[in-house]
Image (cartoon, rainbow, N blue to C red; front, side, top):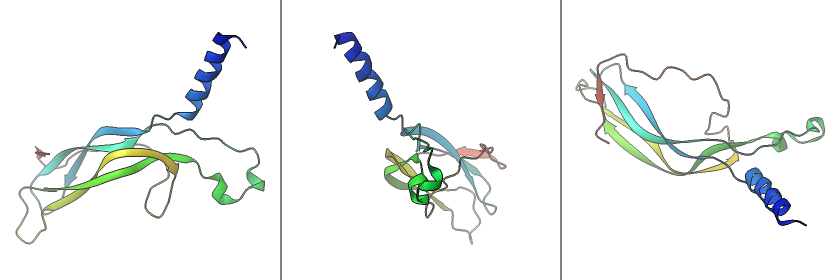
Length: 133
């Protein structure tokens, strides 16, 4: 077979097997009713494309065989910040996950939201303070 044709076939194969699922920067806004401020926290989340295939024989397969791959956490750590301006009877701490690495895998509804919905506004209703993280 001609080397150029082999290179094209190899490129198509690699494209089909690779994914673009990786940690990406994301800002979350955190506030509590009992606190005077909102924090803008820089973190990383897992996002991107995972290779999936839709089966034509859906009625013949088990439900578990129909789940598609999603981009999810492989390794993560939790960090904690203190929300400023909280009243004395309020716990001022907020813990959030930080993606270290990501993977494509089947979505587990026991601990993940597997439905992609419209992006909701991520904003503060109180004065904003940037996190020192």
